[in-house]
Length: 96
Image 1 (cartoon, one colour):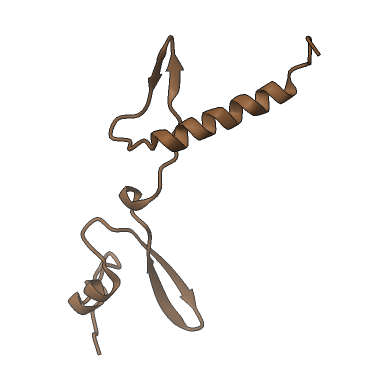
Image 2 (tube, rainbow, N blue to C red):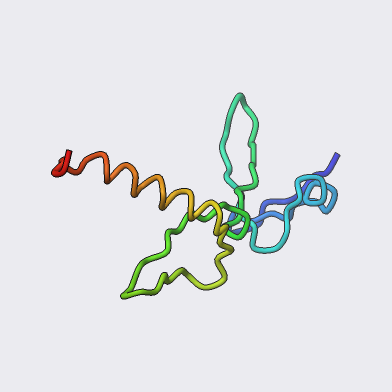
């Protein structure tokens, strides 16, 4: 059993074994709720581990992307090609 004390500002210390088992580190965020008579905490996925979706922006003849963004050029090429084909389908046929 890992008992802790709630201090004046409703703060408590999580036992080391619980932190290690849950992979909780400094600055991690925990979502707390009260269910079925129990207090339950769930580690939220840190922003650094979330998948970030960002699209490059065209400026003049350059493609500009956010810094430190890993770009899969093959995927980007396929998506641009798909968008171009979708746009072509929407254009009226002038020379048919």
